[in-house]
Amino acid sequence: MTNIKVIIPAYNEADSIIHVINDIPQIVNEVIVVSNNSNDDTEINAKRAGATVLVENKRGYGFACLKGLEYIASTSFNDPTKRPDIIVFLDGDYSDYPEELTKLVAPILNNDIDFVIGARVKKLREKGSMTLPQIFGNWLATTLMSILFRAKFTDLGPFRAIKYNKLLDLKMEDQTYGWTVEMQLKALRQKLSYIEVPVNYRNRIGVSKVSGTVKGAIFAGVKILGWIFKYSFK
Image 1 (tube, rainbow, N blue to C red):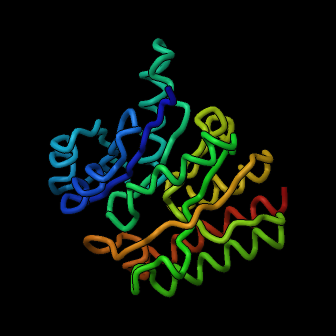
Image 2: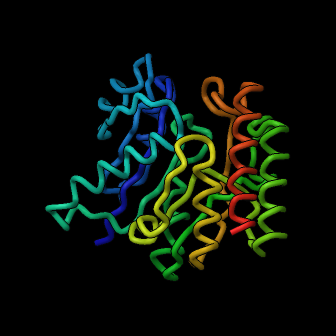
């Protein structure tokens, strides 16, 4: 039986996290919510919904993802049965449709694909669910990756699935907003097989901590472009 674990970075997502966890398909073995210095009821609500809850006080999307991976490595070190086959990353704001996780893992299970991105295509996006800076940033980043690396990505969507052993080989390190693009660039460099699967996308519950602020949008853009240009000169 395939062992699938989900990592959900969450900062003040008390109103949405239960919905996210409840909609995750039963094929998942463990849901890991990493509270990224939340000061609301995110941790309480996640525990009530049945998730494993970790706390990462260093603010940053990458910090939270790395915390989840550290936990998985530590719990599976002496017990190989707990070692996952697939890791799925999912946001805690309920903008993605967690029930579509089966669509993301299908290419890995059925076609031995290494890495799957949930692509937020326009026809499946709810109006207003992505801001203009997000849309432009995705277009710019994926266009540059196409030109510089001949990549076929169209999105930097956070809803993604990857074989655990391949993820370990990537040696992920970004601690903030560059996490998603770092994964895609390293997947290209290591010649992982990859595919995009169109997914639905809706307006999140609550206010975005990245695209909802000018500072967050600028910082995210700088980090993403920094990773792309760093790899273009390697």
